[in-house]
Length: 205
Image (cartoon, rainbow, N blue to C red; front, side, top):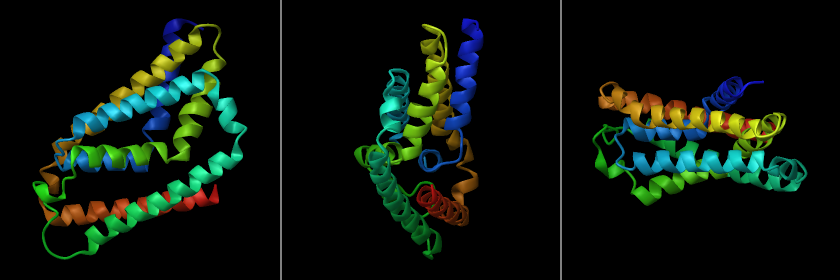
C-alpha cells in the first residue's frame, strides 16, 4: 500500500469515527453557536487529546486497554453519571420558561477553565474515545507495514483536526438561527435526549 493511500485510509477511518454524533461533538457545537470566547482552547484541547489517544493506540496501548476490562467498566459508569448529569442540565434549560437562552447571554458562558474542564470530561470520561481512537485506530494502524502505521495515524489525526476546527469555528454561522430563545430550547431538548440515549447505550454495552 502506498503512502498516499495509507494516509487517505487513516483520514477516512478517523473522520468516520470522530464525526459520529456524540457528547463531545454536541458540546463543542453548542459552545460554538453561543459564540463562546473559549473556543480556541476548547478546539486545541480536543486536537491534543485526539493526538494523545491515537499515539497511545499506535504505540500498542490498545492491547493493554483490551486486557483491562475492569478499568473499562469503571470508566463506563463514570461516563454514564456524567452524561446523565449533563442531560439533566440541558433538560432544565429546555423546559425553563423565560429568557436567558439568547446567543449573547454572557451570563451563561462559562469561564475558559470551566469550558475546557467540561470538554475534558466529555473527552476522557468517554470509554468510546479509548475504544475508537486507542483500540480500533491503533489496531488498524499497526496492521500497516513498517512506518506506514505512522502515516495512517497522521491521516486520522489530520481528519480529526479538520473536524474539530469545522464544528468549533463553523458553528458561529448558525448564530442567526439561534438568536431566538425557542431555537435554543429545541437544541437543549435534543442534547438532553442525546445524553440520555448515550448513557443508556453505555449501560447496555
